[in-house]
Length: 148
Image 1 (cartoon, rainbow, N blue to C red):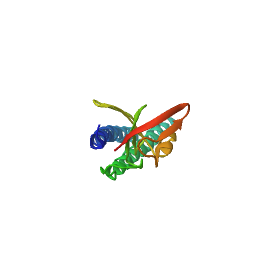
Image 2 (tube, rainbow, N blue to C red; image 1 turned 90 degrees about the vertical axis):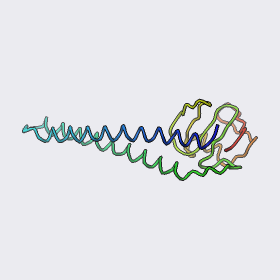
Image 3 (cartoon, rainbow, N blue to C red; image 1 turned 180 degrees about the vertical axis):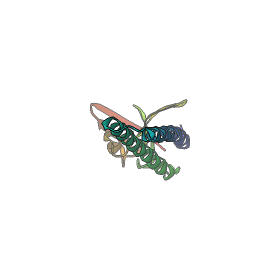
Image 4 (cartoon, rainbow, N blue to C red; image 1 turned 120 degrees about the vertical axis):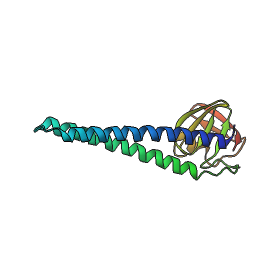
């Protein structure tokens, strides 16, 4: 399992998500323009346009979030770490974690990796630890095997 492979796969997933979100945005713009072309006087027209506008704002917030995640990934160093820090790939006896962006589970041929923020409960516990340290998370003792 290599950090470079994890980062590349995350880039691929984020790019696919960005493409999907931008296609949705384009569809919403089209819907808004077709709603705007209707000559309807009344609340129904304004409610429809307002709902589309709200959806466009939610969509833009998601696009902005994915862009921020991509920027954070671009800042990750491929240099191995001795202590767990932002951008570390941490292999434990329970699971593997990429500390950087809150993406969730990433399924790779070499195994699953949980992509988490350093501000998450497990991320906070792992930060600053070194290989062979033990951390306690809920009722489990977790042994750090490797840090990349």
